Amino acid sequence: MATIESSRQKSAVEYLNFGAKTSKRVTWESWEFTIEAPHLVRVTNASYGCEKDNHSYLVGVEDRDGVLVPAECECPADMYNEEYDCKHKVALAAVGGAVVLDAAAAFSHQSTEGDESILAGECDCTTLSDLPCWPCYRKGVRA
Image (tube, rainbow, N blue to C red):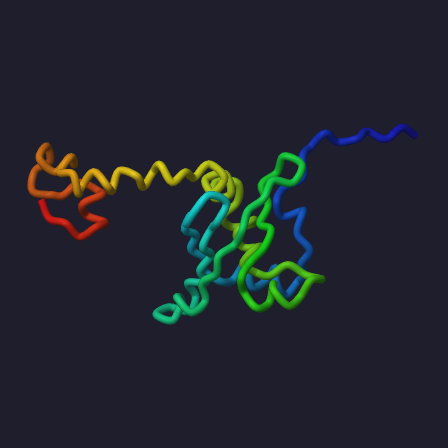
């Protein structure tokens, strides 16, 4: 009997090694994702409420055979256990998925370079009503 090989590309989740406990925690817990730099995503376990900042870690993203995959995490579970991937990497792959992974790979520092224009007085605040433009808002500058 001939077998048909699938030309389907592996998903990011399929590149990770994790158990049932990690899978359940990723499903049950609430996650937030913030792109901080090219190929770096901050993964926050928002289930901890006001203490969520203490459960926030940077996860590196790398390309493996054309698939963007969470590669390393700064959390203790990932740093000291080489056998299994941590829940932050699994959450990024499963919950954040291709959208967040693609955004991390496409992120450029150029997207934040416009902030320097505030100092030169070259922002969009003058064309807006009483609201500051986004770079001014982020810097706390009022129009």
